[in-house]
Image (cartoon, rainbow, N blue to C red; front, side, top):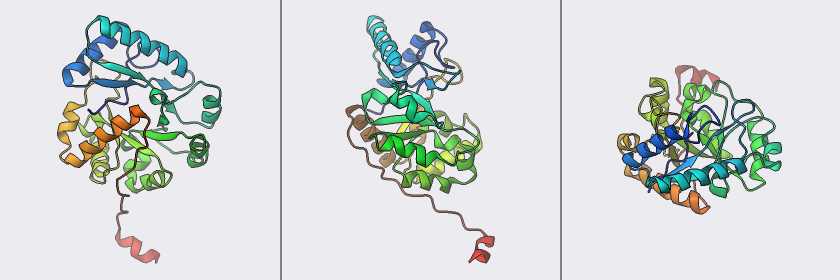
Length: 254
């Protein structure tokens, strides 16, 4: 079973679901689409989404209770989409942020338009605390869209990567879709997520996106990684680095 590891289905704590009614509609849609397990990953970003990991666990427990009561056959797990900044280590030490299902894996989002120079140094401090960063939707970041081979540096650091279902469906534009396909061609992703925010344009459901992935080996990677994520087992990156595209000008740099 491939799980949806990225969603904003907890009501009223970030820019995702606005009410429990909406959350239940989103989860009914997930069930209809074939999703049996989904991770709730509200934003952790000051003045935008500040629910702590312990608060999220309480929310998830309540949602699962209501799902059982409503006979909706979906299980929700706790997590966060942690926005990268220089205070991320302090937030972790203070217990404000945590991992998916109390595993070693933490979903991390970067600024869309520019990467900070200290990303690797700061995330290394998480890694020495046995945290494995999962980078949310790398195909949406402008630096990687402009130069997909930039992801090689993140691969070298031992990070894993999550594809947004909407990216391969073209919901974020052709450039994002093109970048997603480049990364898919190199087996970059271990995970997929709906990144669902509402019941309209950004609803739950990953099945359509999976149908657009032709290579069965990619689906096997997503399935295997899903199980290992929930079991907190070691997950291997089995993809290939992106080859830099040569231009005529590159020959003059020798």
